[in-house]
Image (cartoon, rainbow, N blue to C red; front, side, top):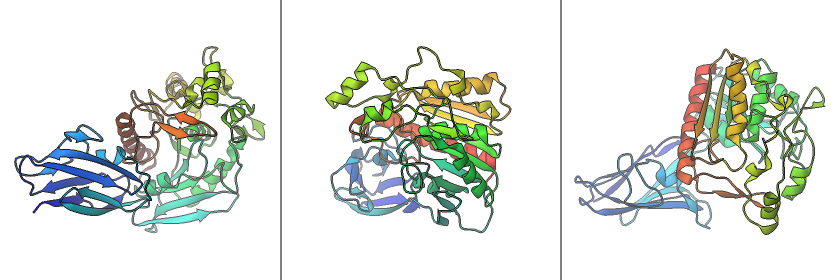
Length: 401
């Protein structure tokens, strides 16, 4: 009788699973489906001469993804319209296996942080040891990047998911956020952890480079789909155009707004907003007149390694060009520490955070609009997996785990 084998059955969300079906008739077609209730994907495979389907070795003959990819059934999921439920791997006509994919790995302790004016959640290995510290910063969605921090803790870090706008206790909007706030988080974490790093995605990647350039205790910075240029604030209100037209700085230092690259709002962007078409926010950035040097982030001051990760088909903002500014400064000004830059040519904006999650949403909700993220699901999923692997390795190398 055919059997489904999933290894491991319980693992962190960023762990790769091995899915096999054994004891099938040779050349039998097997439909395998993965579901979380609200998301699902399926693919059809042919059993080999031994009656085995092995997703680590076999490509589907049809389905929601192509090529050999052990986690293809997870990143290719689309919404079902159903309620969330347990993660289940099913072989039609054979049976089902429930899998525990954990947001917080076993052995990781979660602690809410509401002191020294901070709003965050600390995740750390529950072993009584001192671990390297990482401040984790989300992007323009605001809030707390708990998923990223929780999974980083599973790799041996004391990871502080830090909110800097968008939740109670911090500003409502990304307008004039003091760098001193993140500095206070570094001080707080530094009293409990070893060497310190900062990881940020999108606008958080911009902030991560700024923080590393400002505070000498930062020994590693990872900027994913980020920017080596300070960009304009995202103003208040429920509609996109007024938010972009709100003139102001995103960040302040010592009470003074930092110079920034202003948005440009071309007619095509306005037309897409009015017509309800997906908006590619990359069109709000105009480099034709150059970038003022005082808006460039002095990344050469970072007292540790710098990893820049960006996507060639990012439609949320021109992350390749924005990170190129940081790379130029690092190389031309002789940055003494490890620095690397990786561009994923066919990927879209959503490469930050842990892998093996659905990557099929190329259009996402925004303030009164929808946003185009760019890229292809397969390329974005592969980039996200590689970016996560590189992030963990880089932090381990620079901070020690």
